[in-house]
Length: 291
Image (cartoon, rainbow, N blue to C red; front, side, top):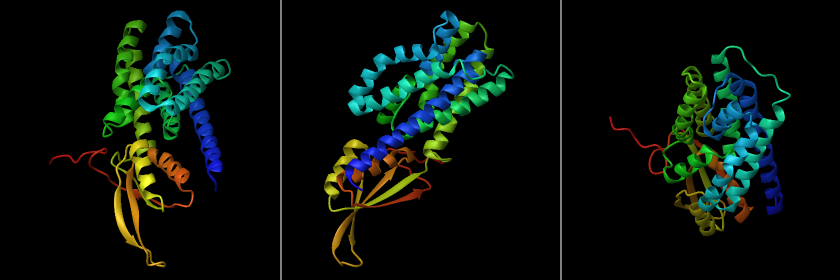
Protein backbone atom coordinates (compact mmCIF):
# COMPACT_ATOMS: atom_id res chain seq x y z
CA UNK A 1 0.00 0.00 0.00
CA UNK A 2 1.54 3.33 -1.08
CA UNK A 3 1.54 6.59 0.82
CA UNK A 4 -1.26 8.12 -1.30
CA UNK A 5 -3.52 5.17 -0.55
CA UNK A 6 -2.73 5.45 3.16
CA UNK A 7 -3.58 9.16 3.11
CA UNK A 8 -6.88 8.45 1.38
CA UNK A 9 -7.73 5.77 3.92
CA UNK A 10 -6.82 8.10 6.78
CA UNK A 11 -8.97 10.92 5.40
CA UNK A 12 -11.87 8.52 4.84
CA UNK A 13 -11.65 7.28 8.43
CA UNK A 14 -11.46 10.87 9.68
CA UNK A 15 -14.61 11.73 7.75
CA UNK A 16 -16.54 8.68 8.94
CA UNK A 17 -15.59 9.13 12.59
CA UNK A 18 -16.19 12.90 12.56
CA UNK A 19 -19.57 12.58 10.86
CA UNK A 20 -20.77 9.79 13.15
CA UNK A 21 -19.49 11.61 16.22
CA UNK A 22 -21.14 14.87 15.14
CA UNK A 23 -24.51 13.19 14.61
CA UNK A 24 -24.40 11.48 18.01
CA UNK A 25 -23.42 14.72 19.74
CA UNK A 26 -26.12 16.69 17.91
CA UNK A 27 -28.75 14.13 18.96
CA UNK A 28 -27.60 14.54 22.54
CA UNK A 29 -28.25 18.28 22.39
CA UNK A 30 -31.38 18.39 20.21
CA UNK A 31 -33.22 15.41 21.68
CA UNK A 32 -32.19 15.27 25.33
CA UNK A 33 -30.39 18.23 26.88
CA UNK A 34 -31.60 21.48 25.26
CA UNK A 35 -35.35 20.64 25.42
CA UNK A 36 -34.97 19.98 29.16
CA UNK A 37 -32.97 23.14 29.97
CA UNK A 38 -29.84 21.10 30.63
CA UNK A 39 -26.69 23.05 29.70
CA UNK A 40 -24.18 20.26 29.01
CA UNK A 41 -21.05 22.25 29.77
CA UNK A 42 -18.52 23.77 27.41
CA UNK A 43 -19.42 26.13 24.60
CA UNK A 44 -22.40 23.92 23.77
CA UNK A 45 -23.67 24.70 27.25
CA UNK A 46 -23.13 28.42 26.67
CA UNK A 47 -24.90 28.07 23.31
CA UNK A 48 -27.80 26.36 25.09
CA UNK A 49 -28.02 29.27 27.53
CA UNK A 50 -27.93 31.82 24.67
CA UNK A 51 -30.69 29.87 22.94
CA UNK A 52 -32.77 29.99 26.13
CA UNK A 53 -32.20 33.72 26.64
CA UNK A 54 -32.28 35.08 23.07
CA UNK A 55 -33.46 32.24 20.82
CA UNK A 56 -30.07 32.07 19.08
CA UNK A 57 -29.50 28.74 17.27
CA UNK A 58 -27.23 26.59 19.42
CA UNK A 59 -24.99 25.41 16.58
CA UNK A 60 -24.46 28.95 15.29
CA UNK A 61 -23.57 30.19 18.77
CA UNK A 62 -21.09 27.34 19.26
CA UNK A 63 -19.35 28.08 15.96
CA UNK A 64 -19.00 31.81 16.67
CA UNK A 65 -17.67 31.21 20.18
CA UNK A 66 -15.10 28.73 18.87
CA UNK A 67 -13.38 31.06 16.41
CA UNK A 68 -10.85 32.57 18.89
CA UNK A 69 -10.06 29.10 20.24
CA UNK A 70 -9.23 27.84 16.73
CA UNK A 71 -6.26 30.19 16.60
CA UNK A 72 -5.07 29.14 20.06
CA UNK A 73 -5.18 25.50 19.05
CA UNK A 74 -3.30 26.22 15.82
CA UNK A 75 -0.51 27.97 17.71
CA UNK A 76 -0.09 25.05 20.13
CA UNK A 77 -0.72 22.06 17.84
CA UNK A 78 -0.06 23.35 14.32
CA UNK A 79 -2.21 23.94 11.26
CA UNK A 80 -2.99 20.25 10.79
CA UNK A 81 -4.66 20.20 14.21
CA UNK A 82 -6.55 23.36 13.29
CA UNK A 83 -7.79 21.73 10.09
CA UNK A 84 -9.26 18.73 11.90
CA UNK A 85 -10.65 20.93 14.65
CA UNK A 86 -12.38 23.25 12.19
CA UNK A 87 -13.87 20.31 10.27
CA UNK A 88 -15.16 18.50 13.36
CA UNK A 89 -16.43 21.69 15.04
CA UNK A 90 -18.22 22.91 11.92
CA UNK A 91 -19.77 19.45 11.47
CA UNK A 92 -21.02 19.41 15.06
CA UNK A 93 -22.40 22.96 14.82
CA UNK A 94 -24.11 22.30 11.49
CA UNK A 95 -25.57 19.00 12.67
CA UNK A 96 -27.01 20.58 15.83
CA UNK A 97 -28.91 23.20 13.80
CA UNK A 98 -29.65 20.88 10.86
CA UNK A 99 -31.17 18.04 12.87
CA UNK A 100 -33.05 20.20 15.38
CA UNK A 101 -36.24 20.66 13.27
CA UNK A 102 -36.43 16.97 12.34
CA UNK A 103 -35.70 15.02 15.52
CA UNK A 104 -38.21 14.58 18.35
CA UNK A 105 -37.47 16.45 21.57
CA UNK A 106 -37.70 14.24 24.64
CA UNK A 107 -39.37 16.15 27.47
CA UNK A 108 -40.25 13.31 29.81
CA UNK A 109 -38.16 12.25 32.78
CA UNK A 110 -35.27 14.70 33.21
CA UNK A 111 -33.11 12.01 34.78
CA UNK A 112 -33.42 9.87 31.65
CA UNK A 113 -32.74 12.95 29.52
CA UNK A 114 -29.54 13.70 31.42
CA UNK A 115 -28.36 10.07 31.29
CA UNK A 116 -28.99 9.53 27.59
CA UNK A 117 -27.71 13.00 26.78
CA UNK A 118 -24.45 12.02 28.47
CA UNK A 119 -24.30 8.67 26.67
CA UNK A 120 -24.83 10.17 23.22
CA UNK A 121 -22.44 13.09 23.77
CA UNK A 122 -19.74 10.86 25.30
CA UNK A 123 -19.89 8.40 22.41
CA UNK A 124 -19.82 11.23 19.87
CA UNK A 125 -16.90 13.04 21.48
CA UNK A 126 -14.90 9.82 21.82
CA UNK A 127 -15.25 9.12 18.08
CA UNK A 128 -13.97 12.61 17.30
CA UNK A 129 -11.10 12.40 19.82
CA UNK A 130 -9.95 9.00 18.53
CA UNK A 131 -9.21 10.52 15.11
CA UNK A 132 -7.36 13.50 16.62
CA UNK A 133 -10.09 16.11 16.33
CA UNK A 134 -12.11 18.08 18.86
CA UNK A 135 -15.50 19.77 18.92
CA UNK A 136 -13.84 22.99 20.02
CA UNK A 137 -14.47 24.89 23.23
CA UNK A 138 -13.40 23.13 26.40
CA UNK A 139 -12.30 20.18 24.25
CA UNK A 140 -9.47 22.33 22.90
CA UNK A 141 -8.63 23.51 26.40
CA UNK A 142 -8.63 19.89 27.61
CA UNK A 143 -6.29 18.78 24.82
CA UNK A 144 -3.93 21.66 25.60
CA UNK A 145 -3.82 20.70 29.29
CA UNK A 146 -3.60 16.98 28.46
CA UNK A 147 -0.56 17.65 26.28
CA UNK A 148 1.26 19.34 29.15
CA UNK A 149 -0.04 16.92 31.82
CA UNK A 150 -0.58 13.55 30.02
CA UNK A 151 -1.42 11.71 33.25
CA UNK A 152 -4.63 13.76 33.50
CA UNK A 153 -7.32 12.14 31.34
CA UNK A 154 -9.18 14.34 28.88
CA UNK A 155 -12.51 13.30 30.35
CA UNK A 156 -11.65 14.67 33.78
CA UNK A 157 -10.16 17.85 32.33
CA UNK A 158 -13.36 18.53 30.41
CA UNK A 159 -15.36 17.88 33.57
CA UNK A 160 -13.34 20.50 35.47
CA UNK A 161 -13.64 23.19 32.79
CA UNK A 162 -17.39 22.56 32.46
CA UNK A 163 -18.09 23.49 36.07
CA UNK A 164 -18.02 27.20 35.23
CA UNK A 165 -20.80 26.72 32.69
CA UNK A 166 -22.81 24.77 35.26
CA UNK A 167 -22.55 27.71 37.66
CA UNK A 168 -23.74 30.09 34.93
CA UNK A 169 -26.68 27.79 34.16
CA UNK A 170 -27.85 27.99 37.77
CA UNK A 171 -28.05 31.78 37.44
CA UNK A 172 -29.73 31.78 34.02
CA UNK A 173 -32.35 29.13 34.78
CA UNK A 174 -32.89 30.42 38.29
CA UNK A 175 -32.93 26.98 39.89
CA UNK A 176 -30.56 24.24 41.01
CA UNK A 177 -32.43 21.37 39.37
CA UNK A 178 -31.24 21.98 35.79
CA UNK A 179 -27.55 22.41 36.73
CA UNK A 180 -27.67 19.24 38.85
CA UNK A 181 -29.04 17.26 35.92
CA UNK A 182 -26.28 18.80 33.79
CA UNK A 183 -23.69 17.49 36.26
CA UNK A 184 -25.12 13.98 35.86
CA UNK A 185 -25.05 14.28 32.07
CA UNK A 186 -21.46 15.56 32.03
CA UNK A 187 -20.30 12.86 34.44
CA UNK A 188 -21.79 10.10 32.26
CA UNK A 189 -20.29 11.68 29.15
CA UNK A 190 -16.77 12.04 30.55
CA UNK A 191 -16.74 8.53 32.00
CA UNK A 192 -17.79 7.11 28.64
CA UNK A 193 -15.08 9.13 26.89
CA UNK A 194 -12.44 7.68 29.21
CA UNK A 195 -13.75 4.13 28.75
CA UNK A 196 -13.87 4.33 24.95
CA UNK A 197 -10.50 6.05 24.55
CA UNK A 198 -8.46 4.60 27.41
CA UNK A 199 -10.34 1.38 28.13
CA UNK A 200 -12.05 0.35 31.36
CA UNK A 201 -8.78 0.94 33.22
CA UNK A 202 -7.23 4.37 32.81
CA UNK A 203 -3.83 2.72 33.18
CA UNK A 204 -4.45 0.47 30.18
CA UNK A 205 -2.92 1.17 26.81
CA UNK A 206 -1.18 -0.35 23.80
CA UNK A 207 2.37 -1.51 23.16
CA UNK A 208 3.71 -0.99 19.64
CA UNK A 209 6.78 -2.85 18.36
CA UNK A 210 8.29 -1.47 15.15
CA UNK A 211 10.93 -3.10 12.95
CA UNK A 212 12.16 -0.94 10.09
CA UNK A 213 15.21 0.11 8.16
CA UNK A 214 14.33 3.71 9.00
CA UNK A 215 14.24 3.46 12.78
CA UNK A 216 16.00 6.76 13.44
CA UNK A 217 13.58 8.71 11.29
CA UNK A 218 10.59 6.92 12.82
CA UNK A 219 11.84 7.45 16.38
CA UNK A 220 12.31 11.17 15.78
CA UNK A 221 8.84 11.46 14.24
CA UNK A 222 7.17 9.71 17.20
CA UNK A 223 9.08 11.84 19.71
CA UNK A 224 8.05 15.09 18.02
CA UNK A 225 4.69 14.17 16.49
CA UNK A 226 3.18 11.98 19.23
CA UNK A 227 5.24 13.26 22.19
CA UNK A 228 6.01 9.69 23.25
CA UNK A 229 9.35 8.20 24.22
CA UNK A 230 10.69 4.96 22.79
CA UNK A 231 12.96 2.12 23.82
CA UNK A 232 15.43 0.59 21.36
CA UNK A 233 15.85 -3.17 21.74
CA UNK A 234 18.73 -5.01 20.08
CA UNK A 235 17.60 -8.09 18.19
CA UNK A 236 18.84 -10.71 15.74
CA UNK A 237 16.78 -11.89 12.79
CA UNK A 238 15.80 -15.55 13.07
CA UNK A 239 16.04 -16.11 9.31
CA UNK A 240 18.70 -13.63 8.20
CA UNK A 241 20.76 -13.84 11.42
CA UNK A 242 21.39 -10.11 10.98
CA UNK A 243 21.46 -7.71 13.92
CA UNK A 244 18.74 -5.08 14.04
CA UNK A 245 16.80 -2.83 16.39
CA UNK A 246 13.20 -3.02 17.55
CA UNK A 247 11.45 0.18 18.60
CA UNK A 248 9.13 -0.26 21.58
CA UNK A 249 6.58 2.46 22.33
CA UNK A 250 3.86 2.62 25.00
CA UNK A 251 0.77 4.44 23.75
CA UNK A 252 -2.65 5.59 24.78
CA UNK A 253 -5.38 3.86 22.80
CA UNK A 254 -6.27 7.08 20.98
CA UNK A 255 -2.63 7.49 19.86
CA UNK A 256 -2.35 4.13 18.08
CA UNK A 257 -3.97 5.17 14.78
CA UNK A 258 -1.93 8.34 14.48
CA UNK A 259 1.32 6.50 15.30
CA UNK A 260 0.52 3.71 12.85
CA UNK A 261 -0.13 6.19 10.05
CA UNK A 262 3.01 8.14 10.91
CA UNK A 263 5.17 5.00 10.69
CA UNK A 264 3.55 3.90 7.41
CA UNK A 265 4.21 7.27 5.82
CA UNK A 266 7.92 6.98 6.61
CA UNK A 267 8.26 3.28 5.81
CA UNK A 268 5.27 1.51 4.17
CA UNK A 269 7.14 -1.80 4.56
CA UNK A 270 7.73 -1.45 8.30
CA UNK A 271 6.83 -4.49 10.42
CA UNK A 272 4.45 -3.38 13.18
CA UNK A 273 3.07 -5.37 16.11
CA UNK A 274 0.43 -3.81 18.37
CA UNK A 275 -0.46 -5.53 21.63
CA UNK A 276 -2.55 -4.86 24.72
CA UNK A 277 -0.95 -3.40 27.83
CA UNK A 278 -3.18 -4.08 30.81
CA UNK A 279 -1.53 -1.41 32.94
CA UNK A 280 0.99 1.33 32.14
CA UNK A 281 2.40 3.56 34.87
CA UNK A 282 5.11 6.19 34.82
CA UNK A 283 5.92 9.42 33.01
CA UNK A 284 3.13 10.37 30.64
CA UNK A 285 0.72 7.80 32.09
CA UNK A 286 -0.90 7.10 35.45
CA UNK A 287 1.43 7.11 38.44
CA UNK A 288 1.63 4.37 41.03
CA UNK A 289 -0.33 5.20 44.15
CA UNK A 290 1.52 5.05 47.44
CA UNK A 291 0.08 2.46 49.80
